Image 1: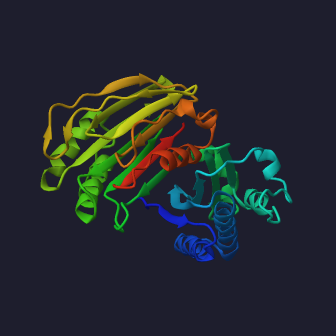
Image 2: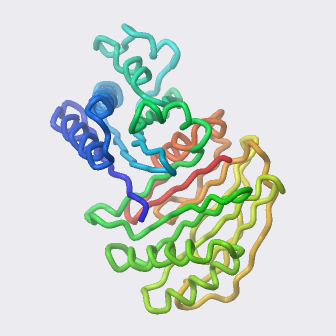
Image 3: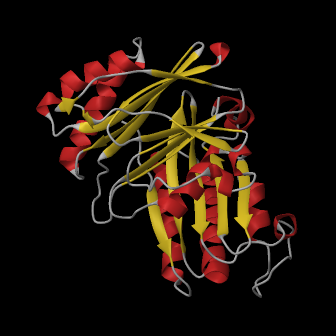
Length: 336
């Protein structure tokens, strides 16, 4: 089972939320077997991120996402706000730079402590800060070349269990992705989504269309789910896609967004037909898949330069600006 994300709301002049964010981050680090040094570094990053939101944007949220990929493990930190933005990101990274009367060491300290660190900011539209902390110092050298995928998966407010699920299968010359949204929310929805993921791994040697058929049969005893599967074959420069229900999927290339086609229906109950579609896949493309917890009116073209940034930053900005806040929400972004 893939770990879900945690979100902590930040409001102005409330230092208890900053402390809460730090405690939650360290709790995740302990569970992921981080050593004390890495726990401390993560704690500083999250504390500074929360302080920056409170001081400069007024309100926003911190999203913490633990992950593992083979022998690598880490925790991704996203600090998201819709404040006034940063006029000069390069200057803001310099120690001593401040527009709010603070010492001005926060962003610089975060960038030095993180394994990967990026900022996307638009004046008048807000800022997204991404920091990745690896479990061990040895992971830093291999992380950049081996993990080009990120996700955010959060339950609806009031629920502790997310009714969405996602996963990935890496094979030589082939990457396979699934996003599943169990009908409704809570434990029963999660049961359907997790069953879809289980069958996905069991049938991963088949085509996306065939895997959907296997999942459809397995979900008959559950509430049912919307499910989409994408298969990337980079050497053939092709992406094969099959979906049923309202999972949104798109390919982003050169700042342009191309939506992919899903069929109507609910796996486990009623689906008109299964159909697989093929799309061109370029080396610099990004795959975006998300559940209906996010709105559909986004377009990467409205964010100059974002498409080429780290997948976590792209996922974070779309989540920030289009999450409906009235359903489970999952977004997956991958760049091979």
